[in-house]
Length: 97
Image 1 (tube, rainbow, N blue to C red):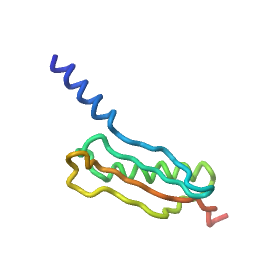
Image 2 (cartoon, rainbow, N blue to C red):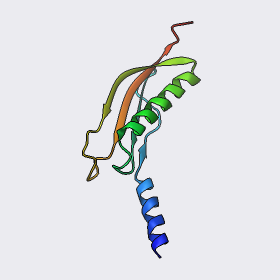
Image 3 (tube, helix red, strand yellow):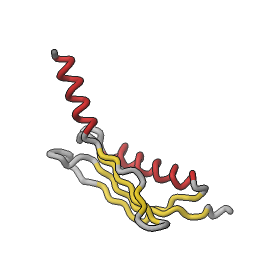
């Protein structure tokens, strides 16, 4: 019975994570938001995940990520204020080309 409760709790917590994916704002500007399912993970992993996904998106376009703005939630990470990172970005032509 305790295993069932533990598994249910883990599934419930992971179900609450937020990931908007890449959302176009204009033809050349995009936004991305990610939020952890709990406050235990900290902001570092969420921030890095947003940066990696945006960088990979631009890389797939053979362009370079240029961050326009970013925002992160501030601790304490309790009562629904879980680690969250938002980024608005554009993809620019690689300067080396």
